[in-house]
Image (cartoon, rainbow, N blue to C red; front, side, top):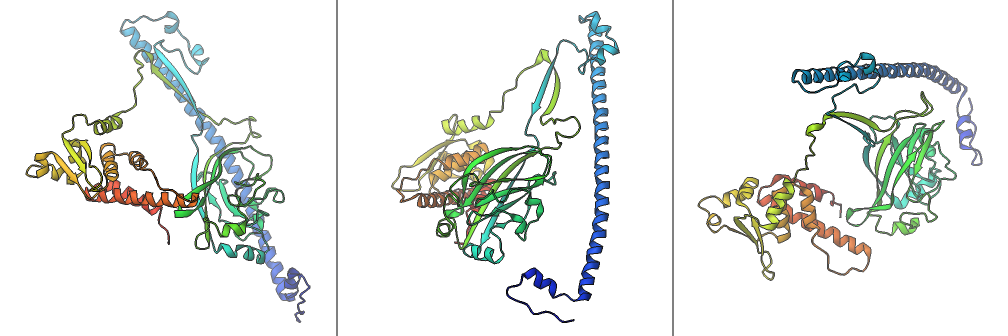
Length: 477
């Protein structure tokens, strides 16, 4: 059959259909018929899966009822045994307690117990919170607007990613619109209708996080970051914790750092200014989103008309010997031995810069020897340090040595962070960008110094931590 010539004024879809022959069109019809048959089969399968899910929920309810009944009976047995012990030991008891009937016990979830038992009820929220960090990099960003124009859309989107691995609806996509235009992801190649059930005409911004369409409620905590100088991510906008209520129909939840702002753009920068800013490196920009989500497992329109979010627990304790046990203080006590020099028996002297005064640390040979094989060898018999009880360190700055000692005494990386934070930048900077670059460079130098000290004194845990921290500062530059 003849194929008609194409006109530049004709619609592309019409041109494509006109190019098919009759045989090809019949084949297309057969394909659609096969697809229709398959979809009918999948629909029947989905109905069956829903019924099976309902049956599983019913069985879970029966299982829970059986567990509650068993727990009540266990409590009744314990109460009776406690009463029997009281009688055997000639302890005082009331006739009412001894003669309580089963009907009286069944009237309360907590059966008649000895007065010495204490009841404590706890309700906890946020126990099912899932957390996910997701980084999305757009390369060739200077070509983005031209490429989007060719694709006849106004935004680019990431691949879907899941936050709560136990909830199939806890899926999100990141969307970037360089000129803060439409966020309609149904027009993107990487998405589908599951992420387009919202008012795209009135929802405009530069960066947005879209949750998969669902009618169940959820609580979401979101923070947005942009990678800047030194490959360090800086938070864009405030941290937001949002209640997404249950709906009658499935809808998407959309949030972004500039959706509600009159000033659009990354940190308020127009796209052309963004391309020349510190946020674009090697013609690429990277965004990071940190999401904490507590998904609701029930819908208020189902069953009883409300849902219970908190998790309740009940504990019964013997109130006669109830004593509050204090928290452990071993980390703080060991650190105070180092900082106060209490009962120290060895001095470590740091002489790194001849122009600066030596820095002395009053330490304890037992702890140093147990934590570092190098210190153990230096303080063993036959070595000069074992006699003078002084160890002189010339190849590590005092701050790195102090961080090493704090870790040896506490095994706590937060103590290392606190020591490194003591060093302040005293130089002047022209703008915030240069100050951030200087801070990143100082941080790398600190970590390298601590890594060298951990390597010398054979402290592998601290060594690996320094390596992990330094990897976060790696870049192609």
